[in-house]
Length: 137
Image (cartoon, rainbow, N blue to C red; front, top):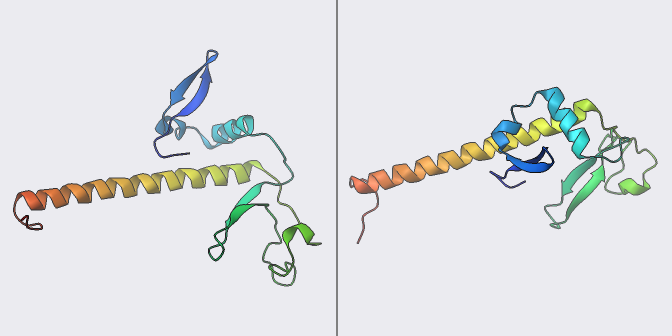
């Protein structure tokens, strides 16, 4: 979801925008319940996003508890789809909570970086105004 985007929630048959700060006020239990209501699908596993820096490719793979375990996982020689040792991780409330918590943490980190950039830009303009910054020609 883009930064600052409103989250739509159902309210009296219509859709009312809900600001991200209001959404983050949800308790952990409410956050998990909301996620389960909005996203339905497999419960025996959940997707993990991967990205290859060398090829530039990315995608999703089922979460596996044996991934990269020495002596068990044979990646990259054996693809996950062909692996005989696949052991999917079930979609539990704890998994949902941890993943939504990570999303909230990332959103907060990006917001802090944005604020820092704004403050740095303002400070730069202030230095220019009082003659301490780059000289104009």
